[in-house]
Length: 158
Ligand code: ADP
Image 1 (tube, helix red, strand yellow):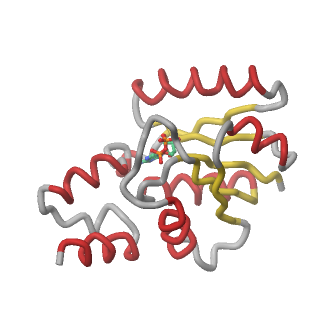
Image 2: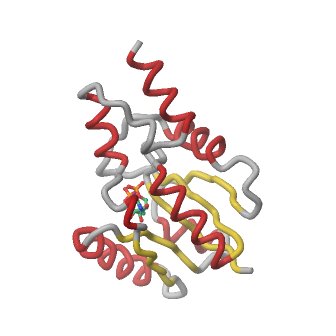
């Protein structure tokens, strides 16, 4: 078993994220999901709410824990003595972005490795931002996000 870190904004968690977490868990045996505060993205849900959604959606899943962090992921990894980051790839656009992240993470902490998992076909068009945009236009996103998130969107629309 090797605990890996799946970092991201998770604003909010989608079924695509959940699929990736389950697949990483099957490979590594332990996954720590870390909600990162991103300087360039202000976000829709407060960090604590994002953590709460993740905890609810992952309830009962052995080997998974949820945390949040600010600042450099490389520093978080060093502090917690963790060395492996998992990220998902939905498209060439993701890859262009991710290889830069992987470069800087290794520059700031030479022990870090990033492992990429391809998005499953049925989830490759799902992103938190697409979900939020659909909701803003009144769409029902119940098939794209866990029940707790769908409920929160429904309540906000009332
Ligand atoms: P960030 O803003 O750091 O990219 P996200 O919450 O958007 O954070 O994504 C976190 C991770 O989840 C990223 O590696 C992203 O590629 C991956 N991811 C997002 N949506 C999906 C999906 N539908 N299928 C697989 N991986 C996904």
